[in-house]
Image 1 (cartoon, rainbow over the protein chains, first blue to last red):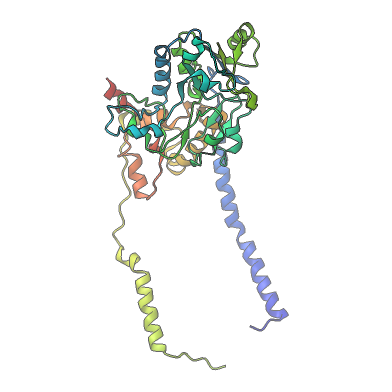
Image 2 (image 1 turned 90 degrees about the horizontal axis):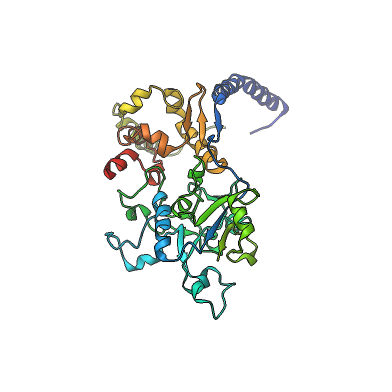
Length: 276
Length: 137
């Protein structure tokens, strides 16, 4: 097509008219936004009873947790509250020995030499050798899982809890590789097959196939002023509180007892302390 | 410059056939549009009269509301929502929304099917909390 000044001016003029004509359309969009702004007089805040802290921490008194029998009700309380599937339930129709690969655990028991490999010696005293340790997510102060998560599905919350946003998890399992404590489990299968209808807690969501899950320090219970489920079920063997509040129960216990942490040398700053 | 078209007949016939085939789904389905679904409210939802926002706002924007709630609850630990009328709600799909709207098949699904959207909320959130509680008893 032949191009000259006359044609160019024509097109430019029409374009300018078009832009002017678009103004009412833009105005309509703007007024829609104003309508939305009318809904802005809503308020979003915390529940008055919510517990807050700078860094939540836990002190587990292993002197009060002598045997498997002592740990069982604690683990059960947690797993029932959070709809954690029991893939090793022999009564389940889907049971298979192979399901061991698909075990989901938020809080579980571990031997001393596995929980504290850096502190274990060849000739360990009988008490520690046979004592079952309660282990869970350490809600590290410097969590490696958070650093590696490509979608920010796992993050460190204001109050120190390392939380999962299951909605955003893409199931890449980088966090599982990064966590030095094995605190994270992956849902290789639909977990609902392994949660009995009568056992499930309707107030807490289940997970779906393809997401990673772990202990959430009972964020949903702290929000309504309750202590974590494991603390409640422990008969005083587990203390919970703010690590940076000198008056808190955990600080009092840390002051008066010798405590150890798991793989402290890695620099992750685990917030679960053990009195041994 | 004189303009001319070779094989005019064939091309026009081909175009007509193409247009007919391409628009087939439209004229084939004329007058067959599914009627808009009628929602059934549970007694509890009826008694409440108004939801978190007005009905029109809920119809148009419940997904944005839920999205906002999710981020506030999970990321900022804010769980209380006070609406413009001063009524407060626990921001929870499982415990607030689905407590009133416990009839997923007659409420949620009807519109979602009609609009052909497949939200996967219920893969995790248990759809009828009360039925579970009743089963327990």
